[in-house]
Length: 234
Image 1 (cartoon, rainbow, N blue to C red):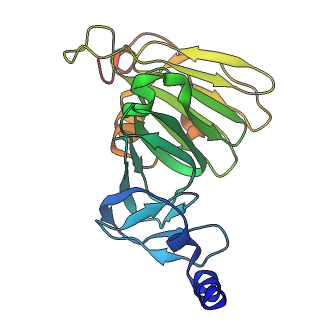
Image 2: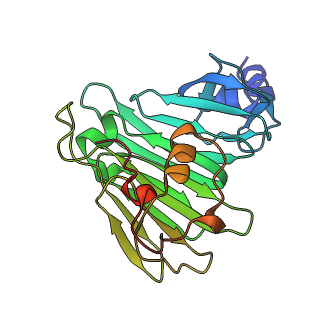
């Protein structure tokens, strides 16, 4: 009997053996997930997602990933993220959340884990790590490896009484903090982080929608103008 049970366990897909950590929602286009060592499976609204899943969208695909602690990831078209780590105790709201963005556009809204202890949630990008300080933000990773990191909110005077948002971008070369909603930085593949700048209205709208945002076009505005006043959240 023991041998039979072992053989059955080994024959199960890797996703079936991994812990369930949430579900997919608002799925459109072609979206797939693959657990480590397993083949791809199609995701649709309501599909379960598992620890270590690599989620991929095609050029028309997008979805939301809702984790058990109420963290929400919105993944845009032509993107790839890996759900690296998720540990959650629903009785204390303690845990760990880590995701890795390797390509495309990715927005995140923190849940109970980061609400209890912001340091327990991190987003990894090709050249570094984004530390979370009770926030929602977004990342766009281009084909050349440049990453646009944007803080979308909330501001200090938000209506929900939530902690003001903040992001700490750390690489082996630089550390830059974002504390003002509507600001962003460019992270180069070699770890160089540019100075914070105000996101243009187009960049903000694209990151909010989980659409395509080209990091190579993200430059600090040369002078004042309507686009410099674009703010998200708050």
